[in-house]
Length: 437
Image 1 (spheres, helix red, strand yellow):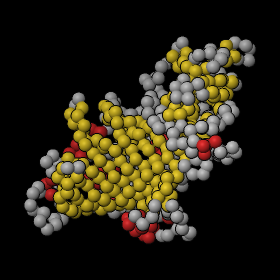
Image 2 (tube, helix red, strand yellow; image 1 turned 180 degrees about the vertical axis):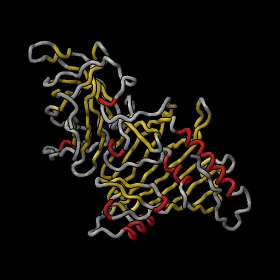
Image 3 (cartoon, one colour; image 1 turned 135 degrees about the vertical axis):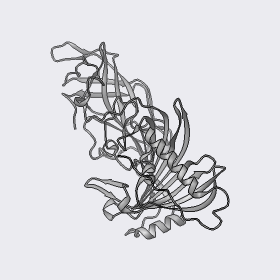
Image 4 (cartoon, helix red, strand yellow; image 1 turned 30 degrees about the vertical axis):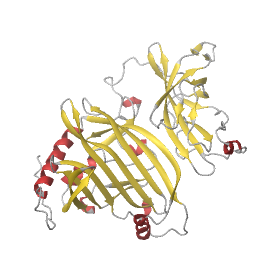
């Protein structure tokens, strides 16, 4: 059944009749967005996410209420200190009205809910779905806010409000989701009626979320493609103000956008991959109970690596089964994925690299490998600064809660800004019978 679109009317401020017609511009921009949204499901982009976690330099106990914290933030009444950073790299796509994703370069979109794939603060919607909702939902009110210059171009600015009853803005918690009202601004280039920027701010969030407010800024531009120009997000910035005074900043950049031929298939696990998506005669998984010694085939640099990137290693020596036969020859390539890339700047400071094995090179292609890490090599104390040499008694580092047992957690204590896991880094693994939780 078709949908009838009501004409978008905006309240005009004094002097609004000079220059472009605000109502006509908004309506044309809305039509452009909806036409683009219908085509967006055929596109996928690589999303690189850099997250920064802040605390106030001076703590206050108990923390102030949200109203006071938001006022202090707006006045820049305090200094923030970086506690930690991490990085993710994903493939993202709109499918069936929502954003889905996978680790970058994966053969399938594994997760319908991105929150199941990514731990920690993360936002979906900036790639496409949030913008469509603003123009589709009933009860969204627009107000013309005048002309501004953004990045050297004349823009028309509009304010909008979305009440809770019309909102699909959800905050995902362990015990479920909560829906919130939100408001914001959009900037439209009148010469092209193209949307250029979106800012969204939630209403005060419920105490059970542990958050006062979430604010998102998204920049858009047309990108030329073989089938015409697409309006795509260039990047987004999600800022969270937490009730304990901490703040999280989640910056995303979208690159390598390309046409996705056919609808994305959602799979929960290997058993759901159809013959159409995987070879019929796939090699059997590597047998369980084998000790595998690996050497990293290329460095992993904390400045550029991200959770979601692949890595390669080589088998250091022949791996023999219980009957003495060779199960894996020395030199064979093993492919894995980085699932954690963190830099913690607290006391003591450290880098955390989380590694997981995926496949082994075979004559028939690649065979799956399921393995748990053996003993991680003793931490390497860097020699780039004298302070590093003073770390004679490293602290005990706990694995992140909920991290799968097949992830090798490599923790490097260091005061340095950067760490590179060198080529040849030694790793020990023990193969298992199948996927492990």
